[in-house]
Image 1 (cartoon, rainbow, N blue to C red):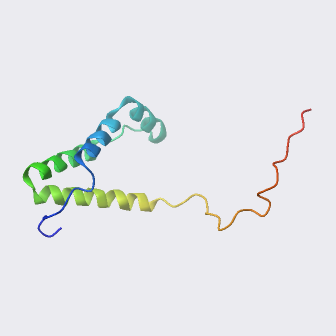
Image 2 (cartoon, rainbow, N blue to C red):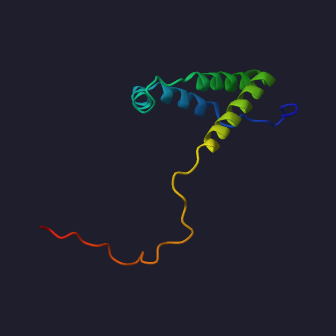
Image 3 (cartoon, rainbow, N blue to C red):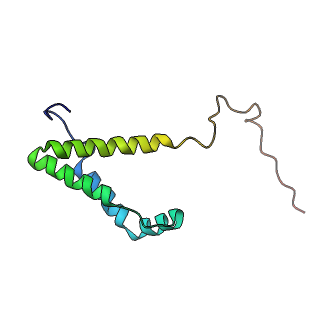
Length: 105
């Protein structure tokens, strides 16, 4: 991130705008409220969009730093969630056999 020469935002500005609009949509609001019990916060997507536009227009080092920190935070948040299931190393021994059929009573 030294002097910003050749640096590009992690995502195109259009991607930040699309994420911000999706976050503000009624479907996302209902889903987020149902799952988490609170309104979704879309401010980070808006800040990222503003920073991306500022980078494209002025090559601001502050905008560059803001985008890098935001993306780094997203990656760290994604890594915090562990897998629920343990991945198999090989298929079950009887994977090729037909499934048992239920008898109609």
